Length: 307
Image (tube, rainbow, N blue to C red; front, side, top):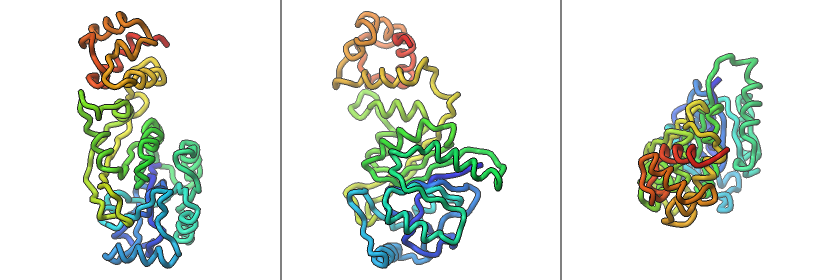
């Protein structure tokens, strides 16, 4: 079975039409059957006024506390959403009600009122797959397609990327600066951080396209961008003796800006042992964390960390 996590817009109408699919505020996640057509929210090309009209009709306004900004460009949404058989996860109880109301006539939608960064998405997905066994015998992994609050993007990435056994791909609309930093980090710069090691350990990221801030209501102060993460299967992860100890070492390595590894990793072994390990993998004894690639960190971990 194949499924996806999406953000359909419950405010705009015509759920059965196909061409356009404006998404709602950042903050909900959905699971969908890949083979089906795109979710459609409105035929009107004036997405801005359609969104305002829908909001006003429900007495709703974007909530700053939830980081809600409504997508106004349905062309962009066509590139994000593309399926049915949904399992949405939505924190805002008002939005939960709107989603249920909009899709009340179909049995291909399940809504979970949850805070995504706190819910047990693996359990929900396994339960979802189990519930579809009687009507679908195909096999495959789920996909995530999400327009999320910028302030929880790192939390969402950390939760989803290690789930290569459940999801095959994660497509996120992120703040552009974050998108570039996750996908195109440069060695020997302050932008190179543990999250870059994490992202490349579990996935193959790719920057897809920029989404100007003018496509949202209310308009945020920054532009956005769409990034895809092709998730690795557990058998494809770099060969470390322990993922827990590996990321603990990586995080420790970056503690203390511009410090050498022989200083930041002294809790693991002596400075002399760290220097020797660095030389053994072809690096200077004075190496700093921002100078090491993922492969370098893997080799260093397997030399100095005892599990």
